[in-house]
Image (cartoon, rainbow, N blue to C red; front, side, top):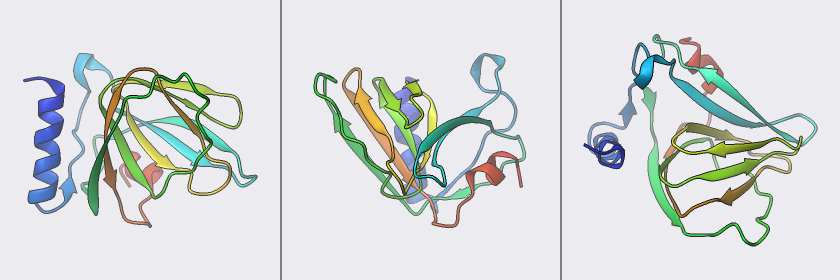
Length: 152
């Protein structure tokens, strides 16, 4: 079964199975730890990125909604700065993109699990490196990804 098939089935399970997603315990494929890339706003209006290790004790997450989008951009034009519209996880089903942050960091995103919470400030830039298909999992406004990843 291909990755996109697994993600499609996962999305269907979330929508029709009560709106909860479970974190897997243990290691990710290849023996590495499961990670989430967090993009967040700083108090001065900037944006930063950090990578969090997901604890085997991470609890199920209530998902309030799921959306999907397709973007076939080439990255030829300069993309605009924007904030995330809500707290949400983003999963690339296909393709690769690059996120740019206000501190000059550029992060390539492929099959990473990304958590977007830069709701204020300048936000981030998203540049499609290839055509991409994204699934967005919306979470409650009070969701704390740092506490969740730590298993609290």
